[in-house]
Length: 233
Image (cartoon, rainbow, N blue to C red):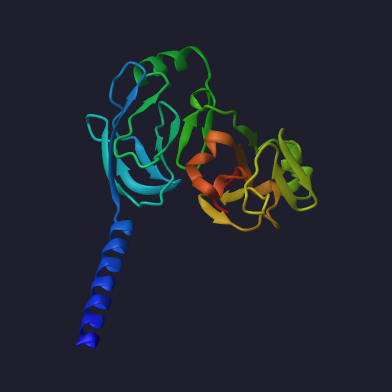
C-alpha cells in the first residue's frame, strides 16, 4: 500500500513539473501599434525579436501581433522611412511604438531640397537623419583605397574604430561576453573574419553602434561592421 501511495505521489510530482515546464516555455503573444509622431499608422514595418527576423510586418492599421519566447529581451521595429526603434519587453503583452522620423510625404518633399544620405543597416537602407545614433560610412569606391594593402587600413580611417593588427574594436561598445570584436556582416552574411578581403573589392562599409546596432540583439553588443562588396565578386 505504501509503495502504491509513493508511486502516486511521484506521478503527481512529475505531472506538476511537466506542466510547470510547459508553462515556463510557453510563448507570449505580444501586440502593438506602430505610428509616426502625427499618430499615423506605419504600414509594412518589419518586426524583429532580439535582432532576429520574424517575417512579421505591421498591417494596414500599423498593428502587429506575434508570439515571443518567454526569454526574449526586446522588440525592434525597422522602417525605411521613419528609422528604427527598440523597446525592452519586460513581460509586457502590449507595446506601442512612435517613430520620430518624418512621414513619407513630408520626407520626400524635404529630400527634393537636400541630399539626404542613406545608410545600410543590414535590413535595408535607412535615411541617416532618422537614426538615433550616428553611423559611420565609407565609400569603398574612393580611388585612394586602391593603394591600401588590406581592409584593415580602411577601417583605421573610420572615426571611432580602433584597429590593432587584425583586431578591431568600436570605441564605446562593450559586452559581458569577453570578446570585444564587433559583428562582421558581408553582403548580409555573418562572418568570423574579414582577413583576405581586398580593398579594391569593397563598395561600402557601415559601422553601427548603440541603438543602430541593437537590431542585432546581443550579437551587436560590440557594434556591427557591415561590408558591401562590388557586385560580381
